[in-house]
Image (cartoon, rainbow, N blue to C red; front, side, top):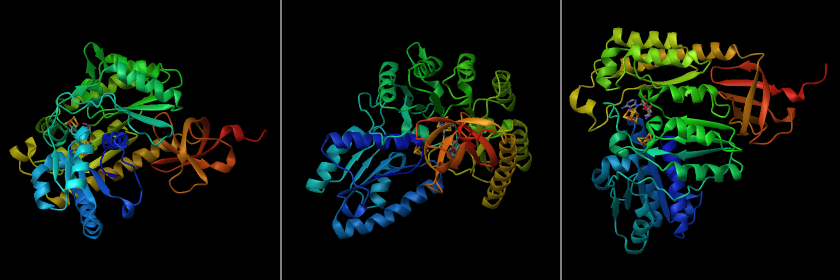
Length: 435
Ligand code: SAH
Ligand code: SF4
Ligand code: F3S
């Protein structure tokens, strides 16, 4: 199984593994040995589609040579449905994010009787309660606490691929989190397309975050991805004050211009967003990150400049900047022409990435000489001779393993000595020689 897209898709792949294993399926990393190849797909932007199509092209070979069963799961399966089955005749099984309980059955039928199978009905209730995702182990565990999205931002395909918002019963969530703490997980990230609109009867998100953070053994709680419209004071207080909730907020801005925000259907103005940031910063030094879309329908140069200025002013720790990509069937695709030329979209994206890079570098430089508390997660990407972990505010930190015997899951104070725009480099302070 290969997974594309966001963390929710990664989580769903863990669910699918667990569902299939209980039905007697096993897993291999080598596609040459597999009887079934599954792709869990993403539909958020055109390049996500293209990556999946590229991959499907490669799978044709396995189909031809060995007759493997090919299954396409996730958001692209949901969004394109029959169109995908028709255009890609070698796909055997197509299952959307709410249909995974059907998957074992559909795969068995495809293997035994070469029947093509489809499960793309969205559900108002499916939360995969009682199915424990098969986690690969480690330090951080993800828990999906709600699924779907009712916001219908006009550019976004997610409300169509993942359906209506529904929250899980907090009882099940807390039991799962307690089990994870017992198995040694130190960090939990609560997941949802619109995570802070979690609401189960009278039980709201601030309460849920607090309850998870209160579990003995859970040292850090994070959440992804919140929407600026759902930040009541109680939630801001928890983030600012609870010792086991990471003091950091991802606050997707999308645009700094009111006309564009309105056309995007974001339900806040530039002033509302600033007010929220003021409310956050009044509570302390809480680093923010954001998402930005460049070149949305009709975005003029002056409107784009508003975004540029707001980014300059906000001082984000990091910003994820995307080129607007029209998605079929969304409100924007129906209502507005995708009229900003590709070259201008690219120029704006590049300029904002540069701007944010200089801001991130500046912020990271301020950390040189400071000691940060890092949760060790595993090997650094570039070298197995180095450890990698994150600060409370979710900045990557890297240091040489030889400096101190440590293991993943441990918290370590690290003195920062050097930085780039995305990474801090340092050494554990316990290893400081006595003066
Ligand atoms: N529910 C989350 C995440 C949505 S997808 C949220 O609202 O923050 C992550 C990001 O992808 C979005 O914040 C947005 O910046 C970007 N995105 C979504 N649809 C897009 C599109 N059609 N074109 C370009 N970027 C898009
Ligand atoms: Fe998409 Fe908006 Fe929902 Fe986020 S909140 S998933 S951007 S519709
Ligand atoms: Fe992609 Fe679906 Fe996630 S569209 S970003 S996999 S919710």
